[in-house]
Amino acid sequence: MRGIEKSFGAEVKALKGVDFEVRPGEIVALLGENGAGKSTLLKAITGVHTPTAGEVRWFGEPVVLDSPSKARGLGIRTVYQELNLAPHLSVAANIYLGAEPMKSGLLDHKAMREKAQTLLTHHGFDLNPDALVGTLGPAQRQAVEICKALSEEAKLLLLDEPTSSLGEKEIEELFTTLKALRERGIGMVFVSHRLPECFALCDRVVVLRDGLKVYEANIRDTDTSTVVRAMVGRELSDFYPRVASEPGPERLKVNLDGVAFATRAGEVVGIAGLMGAGRTELFEAIFGLRHMSGSVSVDGKPLPLNQGPRAAIKAGVGMLTEDRKRTGLALGLPVRHNVTLAGLEKIAPGPWLSHGPDKAATKTEIERLRIKTSSTETLIGTLSGGNQQKGVLGRWLHAGSSVLLFDEPTRGVDVGSKVEIYEQMNLLTQSGATIVLVSSELPELLGMSDRILVLFQGRLVADIPRADASPDRVLHFMMTGKDIEL
Image (tube, rainbow, N blue to C red; front, side):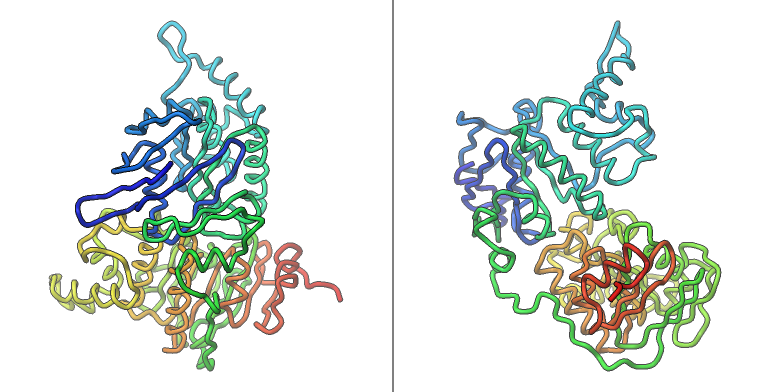
């Protein structure tokens, strides 16, 4: 692709003369903050958006990618962050959905199963083609999505945040698969906000910023700080800018199914653990979404555990859920409704909602969090991932929550937005709030927590002060439930 431009109307120029190429058997990391132009470029490659200007060549020959069917016909396939699978159908049925083998006008189940088994075996996936997709784990579902993309002679694979819902072991399995595909000559574009993954997997990196290609290098010739500086256009002298506050009185006290801890005002308490250790389940129980035996109190007052999230919100508890699109946002509603949802009594003490205070409260959070939206009425589902997450955070800021449960708060969020969220965490704790942080990114936990609790198979096995929380020690607790033997 040479000189690719894409405009939306007279005002918005999403791509500005971008040069981009992928060679057979190469994995290219496409990086940039939300709004940098990554999605627009991917859509130009897949024929969803026709470039306003520029030239596209496919194996040296000029082509016009003016429709998704044209791109598919060339062998261009996409694996999206939000997997597009039918959970009630089998692995084989999902792989060939829309392209099922037929016999005498009827679906040939036997041929479909055999084709699926051949494809799975060829690409090294240990999956039963008859298994229902709804019974599979995240990594296995990702494998089905990849096989679906590869079922029609794929030559270029576009992977949009493929690891966002995977654990460490599952990511390793995925990378083994992608490296094998690279050896077979398939080119890939890898979009991720997790820079260590890009350096572990990719051959080359391309950075977009404000619609421009601002940086390109072989992975072996660059480093994380250089890439981050290119992405955000400024130095990030301290990527985890934790400013410790003087701990105040006890805010949250938890004793649920044997997991007992307390947090104090002004404190960030990190929770580490492997997938399945019980981190999210613990949050759901505190917030009233899941039943566990025991007790929870906020500011010394018991929190009813059988009255759902409403009681938790009333007590001052807010929760950023792990999956913002599925459980954190009303995607079909505007930013205004999403931001004010948990604090309606502040702007509507009576039975009627007034749009004036509603809009004013939303504008306050938009300005405070620098949410990129053209209006308070913009549907939040149309915003970038980072701005959606800021919208969820704005909800709890508006509600005035003093206890905040952050479950993977920076998942799928660009580097600049991450730092802005960290800065808000500092402001919240400085104002007396307490934050309990769950993150699968160990550097984030180490960088932003005042102490770290470690869960192992549903049990609390460690409470480590920041000064003693080395990566090796925390990981050892996570994997074995025990401290490192000295």
